[in-house]
Image (cartoon, rainbow, N blue to C red; front, side):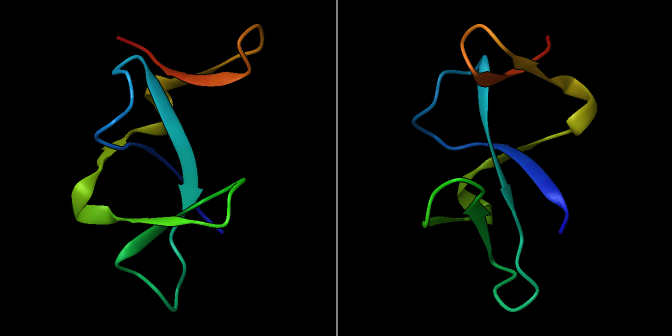
Length: 64
């Protein structure tokens, strides 16, 4: 399973979500910790080198 970091349209630009792309459903990104998915074309994919985990807020942040 390849991890994908992405920003849905309704999230603050300093944060991102984490998910994966299923081999059987390649048009969607499935959220890692929730039973839902989002269309790939509706999100911005973030390079994993630009993502850090903020332990204090328990969230993934995008480096600028």
